[in-house]
Image 1 (tube, rainbow, N blue to C red):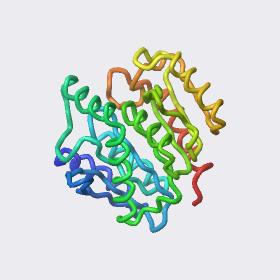
Image 2: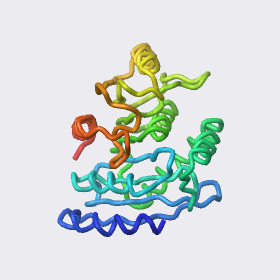
Image 3: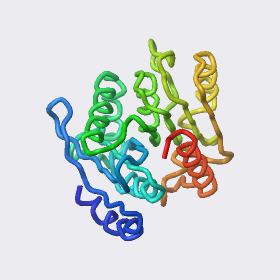
Image 4: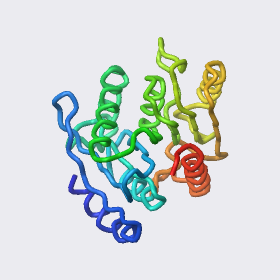
Length: 247
């Protein structure tokens, strides 16, 4: 994870006043190594589980973790692909995400293993929200359907389809969906379908669309980044954390 350390050294300067210094964490799930990132500004801080997109855990997620730490949250950015696995080619990204889409049991086990790791680091997982980007958003909804006892689940331009045979009847926390209405990868039909599912299941939810925002609209420096939608969605997400988690 050497490429994480450069940006972390820069972010530590801005976070030092808040007493939050993060570190890479090597952990194991079912005997296999994974590399996450943990940061906490204080003991028993409200906890946020962060799930990466199809690139794996990179500087992007670490920056978001520091942004949350500056607001007083402990954050564990987990790893769903494995230590050192950070795909850059689209075919490799599809391979790694595809393997987990086909093996939902493994996906759930990896997220549960990450929560256990965060707990061992001192995170208060009983006062927690999970959120993710793109592929990570789809993983967050998988976690929500698994009956994991978290206070809330949030997605940014995440996958919204529910796998055959699954539903939201065991979901325990509120759900926040933030989506670009110009997203051609995850359509508004899927957005509407999820709204119907959640309403039918009686799950507290809020679903927001941002006009003109394409897929991956929050990714800094990307060719699909849209500043207005990024700022609005981040503001709503931080409000959701304040509403959902106890200080």
